[in-house]
Amino acid sequence: MTWGPMYMYYRCGTCGKQFKYAVDLIPRFGEKFGNCPVCQTPGVFVKDGARTPDDGDYEEVDE
Image 1: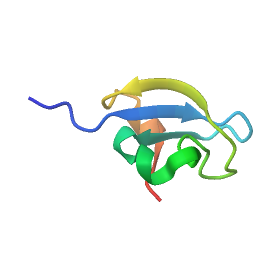
Image 2: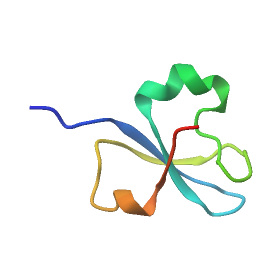
Image 3: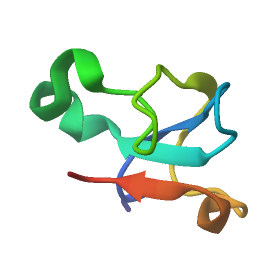
């Protein structure tokens, strides 16, 4: 059984946006991993794990 992708969930302390990054994308984003996709400031870590019931509240960053 698999739980699917693992995510790290963040909230932006500047603009308030909620977003998530798939853990397997750490090498692709490098030091920008965890930055807000809107204002590029480092996000505030909220939680990590497989998809949670409130997963839809967080925008997935993939580019």
